[in-house]
Every structure is written in C-alpha cells, then in structure tokens.
Amino acid sequence: MTELGEVLMSGDNKQKEAFDRIKKMIGSEKIVISRVPASTKKGFVEFARAEYCDDWGMAFKFLWDYYNSVCPELSLIDMRITALEQKLQQPVQTASTTETRHIRLLNGNNIEVKK
Image (tube, rainbow, N blue to C red; front, side, top):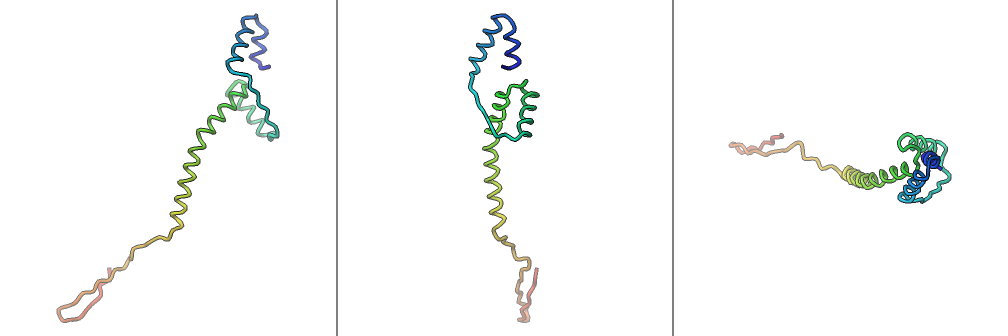
C-alpha cells in the first residue's frame, strides 16, 4: 500500500471511505514489468519519487503521454532528413562559369570574348 493509503487508513472511517472512492475513480489496473536494467529502474524510481510523490503509475502515464506526443514529430523529422539526403545525392547542376561570345569585327575577323 502506498504511503498516502497508510496515512488515510490510520484515520477514521471517513478517510478510509475517501481513499476507497479515489481508488475507484483512478481504477486499480496493474502492470508488471520485468527484465528492466537496474540503472533504468533506479532512474525511474527517482523520477517518480521527485516528480510524482512515488506514484509510479502517474509517472508512467506522463512518460507514455510524452512519448506519444514526440513520436509523430520524430517521424516527420526523419522524413525531412531522408528527403534532404536524397537531394544531396543528386548531381549538382552548375551553371557554366565561362561564357564565350563571338563578335564579328568590321574588318571581317571573329574574336571570342570570355566572361
């Protein structure tokens, strides 16, 4: 039982009833996750303790919501990077840097002028 539950249970029946109503509103879905690296579990527990008063469920919900909001953006960024990579792989068309003009002089000679 959580610390909040223990505090509420130690009081009178009104507190216990309030706690039971809160539990019913939130729901009592359970999740068991195994094979989590120790450092990851430690980091998650510290995060839940600091941000959500040891409420692992709400910490998990926050992380899940954050993940769902970020993933579509990551997909869009990935598509844009792929498009840029494809553009970079195409040969670059350079304009001719030296243009040659032919000029006919009055005496009939032709000369080439490079720009």
